[in-house]
Length: 284
Image (cartoon, rainbow, N blue to C red):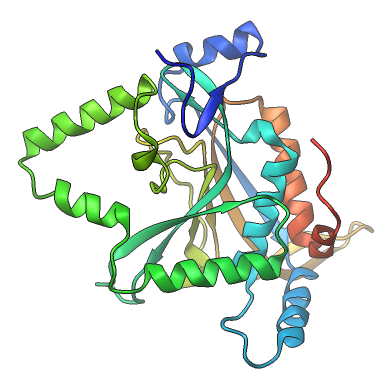
């Protein structure tokens, strides 16, 4: 096995238990931990309204909650780098980049084709910058021009089933031995830090999603629709406020649950208090 990959490098400072976990828990779905967060949007929604008001006319697209969540997630992955890991071939690797993937429909209809996209972040981007990047990616994704992943799948699915299974078996083997070329990893949305499914954009509540054995995504997050949710204020009184639910699926082999829980609390803080993103990222 080679110890260098185009998308990550081997983590060597690990406890014996952490090194052993990929051999005890052999697959991502065997290693899943599920977690739900309910977010209070009392400050986030006015903040987004203010951002859009500042931009005025001529803006190519509205800045929305999904852009805020993407910006907050990129910041958390920068400040909490142990989240940005994955398991391959029984070894734990640190990703070289922060990359967030998400699915989108080419058109809002039952027959609209589903496609995916992946964006690379530094973790220093403002919500406005993330919105610009995302609108550009969505425009390209919803065009009639297929992306590289769509082209590859279109070719592969024309092959006979046994041959396609053989190719996928070879792909998994090359990936496990770190021999898969960068040209196949770099554009593939399933090789990413986190995959988002924004069900709220089509009016649905959040749901728990499986992880994929294909690729290297260690996190899946499903965003629900904005609705009225009960929250307890600082005086213990129950109030109804605008909010939403995000449900996470996490591969526990990459880091411990305490580290993950603290990281998700940081994410929650950035979304609920979005002006905190204006500060420079904390040093890691």
